[in-house]
Amino acid sequence: MYSDDDPYLADVRRVCLGLPDAVEIESWGRPTFRAGPKGKIFAIFSGDDAHPYGLVFKPEELEEREALMADGRFYVPAYYGPSGWLALDLTAAEPDWDEVGELVTGSYRQVALKRQVKALEAI
Image 1 (cartoon, rainbow, N blue to C red):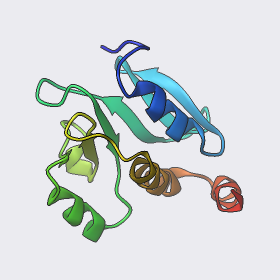
Image 2 (tube, rainbow, N blue to C red):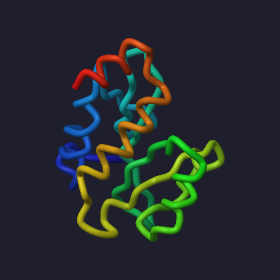
Image 3 (cartoon, rainbow, N blue to C red):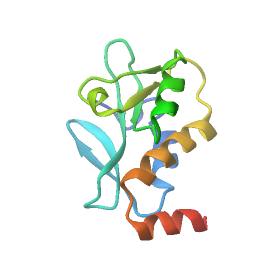
Image 4 (cartoon, rainbow, N blue to C red):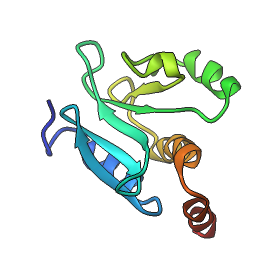
């Protein structure tokens, strides 16, 4: 379902794996990024027919989710959307990797252990 040379995947990995104790684990045929080897998922490199390359994440606040949904680059992903997750269509515009980093970091904070959050704040 993906290839290591997919566009954007190297940058997604750089952003996600730059967080404390973050690991990549393939699940459902896609790279998932977790807060530690037994940790919870905070991001998924995904895609579908309408959005071939996307990054699924969970916004920190309801207000943030609503604001992001007003931006055409974001969409509600299948399966994850009902739980509050969103996806960024990486092909909709040239990705702003600083923005991607902020979105991923917010998602990470929701699942990270206290020591991981402390390590993140020390960066």
